[in-house]
Length: 310
Image (cartoon, rainbow, N blue to C red):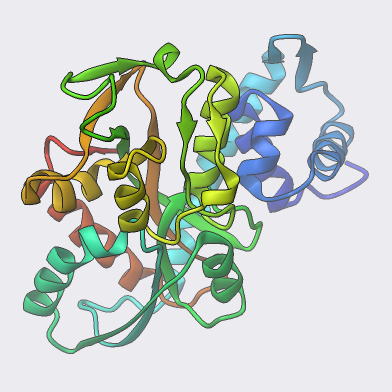
């Protein structure tokens, strides 16, 4: 072979084979489409085979591409095992862990997680700071956070992600709203509605903006909320409708005789929540234990609110 195959090329091709689209894979990897295309072309040139066929509906793996995709998955699995082996294999969590968390998730999940962590690993000290995804990612890459709990994906090639669960986004409306009182609402019902959202710094904003564009709803950018509580309060005043995460609804609406009416969308809308840390971090064992505690809490305490993912 004229050139050596790189681990980056293998990782990029595996992501592309799974995503089925250059755009989607590039977003997941946190790189540009031209950069991804360049790496895939280099891999094909080194191997001397064509791995992909472009179609209007997406990408199709060639027979050689299917074989290489399988091998790439095995290589990445082995690399992950090597990384775990090479890191400090602590039997328990200790020391100080700097955790970043988005305020749309942390306050409604972390209290139960922290109670279990303290009981299981009393030597662990946690420094927790909230922030929007954009700020969390910058602080993680810069080393100000060791790990972050956030909505995925995180768009950075320096970050490794671990999905934990899928969380429904529920429609919140004022009790005086025509949709109030029911259990479900169709996406078509949002046509012409005024929709409130958090600022663009939050990943949730992009989902709500995309939903508005798809349904003909109007996103009220002049009334961006600074928190989920602020959104809920504006909705209660019938200033518009909004999308609220299921864990938030469970904690702040249903448990408090809520001041808004909450409905399930059909088809449903979800977000993926997970952990992210730097690929070059030296202590993934601690992160994996932290992940396992969160999964335990989700499975035991929120079986009807979210869906675990592996």
